[in-house]
Image (cartoon, rainbow, N blue to C red; front, side, top):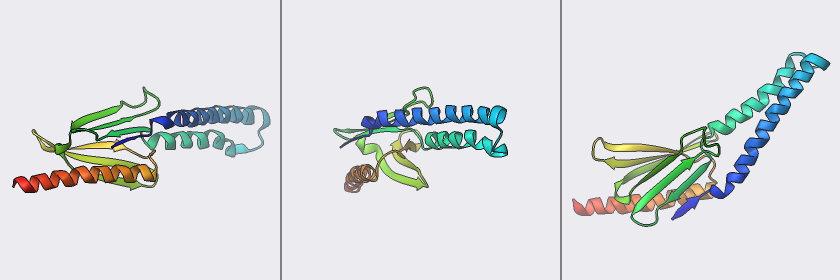
Length: 161
């Protein structure tokens, strides 16, 4: 199964640009308020605080683009940000038989996918991906596909014992 929200990159770029323009406008409004009009008093700081909080919220939600591919014998995960220099993109590919379990954690508006894979050195390794920008249907499809792989792996392990 393939899952990708790469086609929404232009929407996320637009939102990012809009938030940056909102911040620039807020800074301009703050400067005009402080040095020209002086009507609001201390509330004029909201012109800067609100856009900064919205930008922080946008970036804290995680990397915007998530791609998953389980076709063939390997599972491939890619997670990147629309702004290339902001975060290092994640890209992991491993055989399906190494997938032990997965967990989707949702806290407020932040969603994370934790994948546990078997490793020769340490026994198991946990990989973390940010899936906050996936829709509920995409997350359900991802869970269904990963459940299928984990179930197949558990059946093979039980058969070999």
